[in-house]
Image (cartoon, rainbow, N blue to C red; front, side):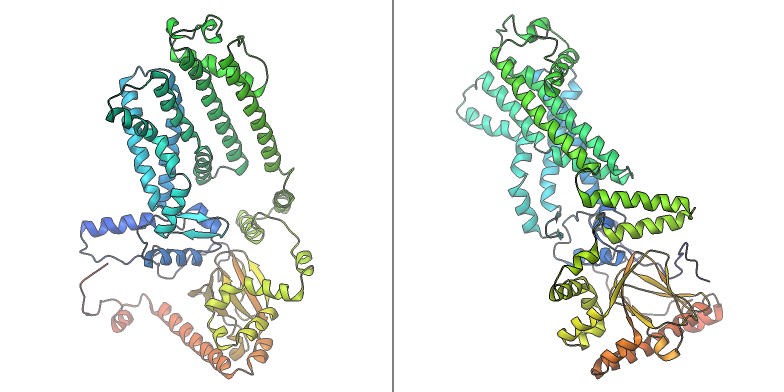
Length: 565
């Protein structure tokens, strides 16, 4: 009896990392190297990996591509180390974005804080910057994972390398170098402006920080709307934080030691002569900035000086534009804009209500939701209406493109001309099955042949013994051609897309091609022999005499070569 609710695989465990196994006497260096390589290859448990790839076989294919390529040392964007890198980048840049603007307007009173900000964090920044030359990226437009070092380096140099370098205090060193060579003391105002400029380069990474924070929250299974709301809050705060320090920094540079009595900073007793605390300066500047940013009021102090008025005018202008963007993005998120996304969300809500009303089991609910997500990819559209609007030629090309992976991996299509392959594919129908679905049952009459486009299935015999798994490009259902009945149960292991055709139609189509028919008949015979051998092996497992005779209990003598990885 096959348990369709929970599949507990009884087949031997496979090595999911696709790396070569180490010998028992492997040195610590070899173990360390293998452990590091496991960190930089694709992690099948990475949530982004599950979104990008439709099934596990595609993940394992990507693993093999990375391991066997000349670029095995490049960190895969869906690896464990890449996720750790994002967390480190997020923490480092956030700390710098908060502390650096404040330290540009006041001197740190804590020696430990000064060492961390001036020495430790810049070193971490440089390590993170140069590590990006070895981290692959996702080409969203081409839907491609790039791990070639030349393309990775070129992409980073063209985008954020200079920005990141200047954000890590690189600008100050570049500007100071000529002064040090010619032994000239730079102007105080000039140096303060140069030191503050690196803050803007830090803030150029705001969207990157938000993306990394979204990924981290996604790992903890925080809902999309909460992640988006927290992103809005963080983005708003960092902008308010930057402007709060800017409204104090500009007058400080302009006035230097000659503060006018009608400056709002002097009126608020925030000028250096009053020796205010850093908390007081930040609190008053933050409140004034918030009033002008959101346009709620003109603040509790009058702004009379020209440079101060210009600062607050720019803050007001930016705040108005940012608020409009925030409202538009919020409307899009909640479905007012974006018909496809809102229709998908609405139908998903209806599906959940339907399952609750019918009191469906929790496992079945999960299977239905996973099927719905895989089938529509978080978009809702009328596929039948779209296909009917296309010409026959375009419709055939589209169908052929959707079956490209099946054509590449299935052996039977290699015995057919290309034109006939397209014709055979056009005769098939596509069906998507959720994990736990049973496609075929023992002793049930079967008249269809199934080709696996993406996904995987488990094969059980009539006594409930699990024999094997099939994946992309494999086919099943042929046994009925010889036995006139189905002796095997086929269980879906993950969301699987199948191409189906009647066995009678397939035989008629392949009849003019004797090589294809011969291959099909030979494959059926091989399958039956494999099933019998696998069943006998399973039945005899646990019998000591049988295992001794077959050599499975005691290891056979064999020549061992020198291990090389």
